Image 1: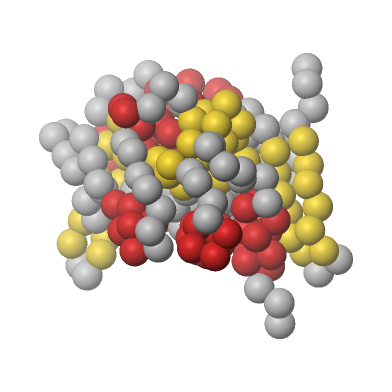
Image 2: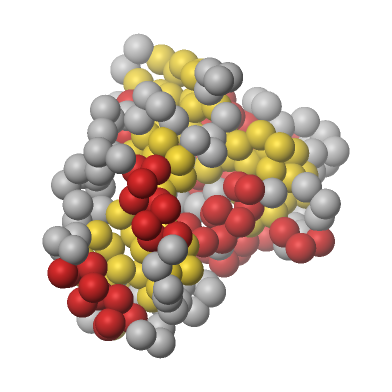
Length: 226
């Protein structure tokens, strides 16, 4: 069976050319994009600078010989390519299944063109079946957990090996099992105004282009200008 994630990633890598500063996403789909860029750097002499969204992607890119700079060392990023956990036809989405949502969003807002690569299973009519990650500071995290529970958000601390997962930025993640998010913009505003919340996995209207791989091939969708 053809790997749909890999197909989308290879298509996205075609947009990368010499001299670009490229945001490198995190996760199972972005992994293939970084691998393809590494191949092009080695085999084609592609000249780029990468800006990574996690320590995991940083390690992968370094091993492939992709030169790196931090987001603070560049004026802007030409293009960022990342995966997503859910996407709607309105180009709203959930990210953060890999735990890198804060760094991913910082890189996203620093980029001229923001591209998501997904397989067709990630396309949904309404967000929420995938748990919404919320990155929170460690101090007061249990208080926030209780507040989310009272709101009926069915929170759970993300754990690894029985211990609370700690992000690259030294925060916790609380995953909200919402089932459905009828108004992602309103929920984003609520979370943005919640003290102790550092960032959340709602990426509303941020992506410019979707590259979707499915059983009938790879298609590119551009965000409609309002």
